[in-house]
Image (cartoon, rainbow, N blue to C red; front, side, top):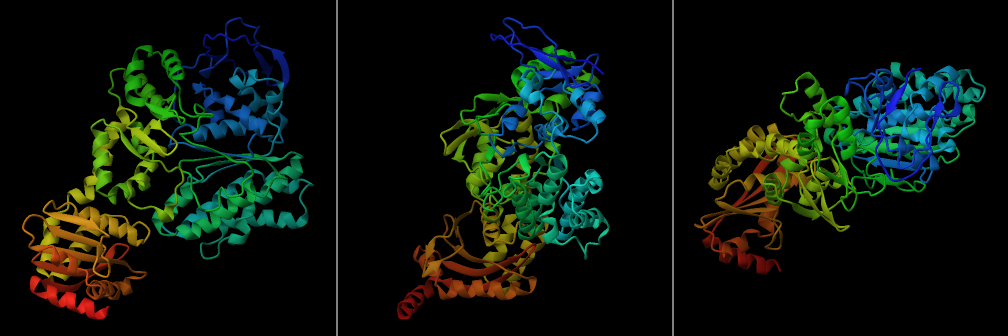
Length: 637
């Protein structure tokens, strides 16, 4: 058995500190009552350890490997009180969610091997949870546990992602394969259990049926509860990854139809077998029935006051970690680079990025003269941020530039994300950035939120990456050539416009979800690059609404009207573009623009399908056509 030392802070409370001899499970006094000292551990570390490491997110590996561990075991208290049957912890990537679930796993799971259970109990000696009382200590290694991560559930096609999901669930069934030798499972259930175990050898064109998959976690929880005689604890990490990847892969609806019932079945209609569940992720996915109907769930986000310090490092934890690592003089540097997150509605809880703090200590251990880096920047692809930034409207760009100047921005906060309804509005863009760690709370009234860039690391990420995402595709595009083609007002100009959009612009972008709103936003952002034109969107015109209008500033020689469509197949592109061109003509969109004094108004229909498009010329009007258009419109009425 190894001994652990716990870092303590001076406080004002009086508390009797108890420990446990974990190898025997027998309670014993480890510390005497200490007047004036309240036990608030910063981190626990095997004596003699000199290493802080990010090499593993497995709790047991870190403790047995004598790595420093910031003690977050107090999170067990509200979970074991079972105030909520399901708790969602939503934080930015690399904020300790995976390691926390690993800790919960080792604390709670009854492995059916008493020697292994005793070893796992020994991991927690000297930690904060051991001073919380006999009830909490008595819960150690008492429950069957289902523990999965959806981090790897992704792919270019639904079939690939589905196969990855089957593999993850099959792995958890394999971990509990002892259930096949127990008496608590009937023969029919053993057939199903073996079917899941054999699913890994199935081909993509003959996968495990969805009807079997969506009840797999429910049935496993039933089997384990029956065998153990205790309800099952469910731990699920990165629950939102499959939906995010599916959205950008173009198979979102198919994946929702799997993930939603899979989670509903085990979390929503399973009180007989579920002790409690802890689910982690980055974003709250709304309107997909994942949350609906759950029994009193807690959704804990960066704006929640409760457990606001459960993930990430507090100031005192960072100070003590630096001191124990031999770098107490680097605190100000650490604060400048990796502090700045304000969690809770009032933003009162100061949190450091834990991944970056530990990485920085590793850098200092290797070279004390090294310059701080931005390790968090490479921990996630952040596709959702990039896509929202690429298609953002002018107001998004303006606010992004204000942030990079060190200013605060204000927006209507959205803590629920509906992928199918995302658009380029700044509320969506900056709400996502808040919940993914690129912004932090500087003031929140329950509706509107004021946000700032949290620290120097993220500011550097903005400068080096996000600013490129906003400007990258658009900023390197010579929009003058596009306008020159549009101003021709003939079939040659239409074909040239199509060629430019396909080969020079769309080819360098990811397609979003084949939504007209996305392409509308892309064109709007693109056309606004030409300061010689005023670009407006969806204004009343003629007998209906045109999508986009570009008016030449000053000279009033040209105005260009674009009607945007979204095709369901590539074969429909040409016809759909033609419908857009006809619509602009039929609804007399040019009338109001000609009345404003523009010499020439040209209309086009544009239709998109993924990374392809078609452009059809509508009509080319001059001032001499205005009276005729007005007369024709009156006759049609």
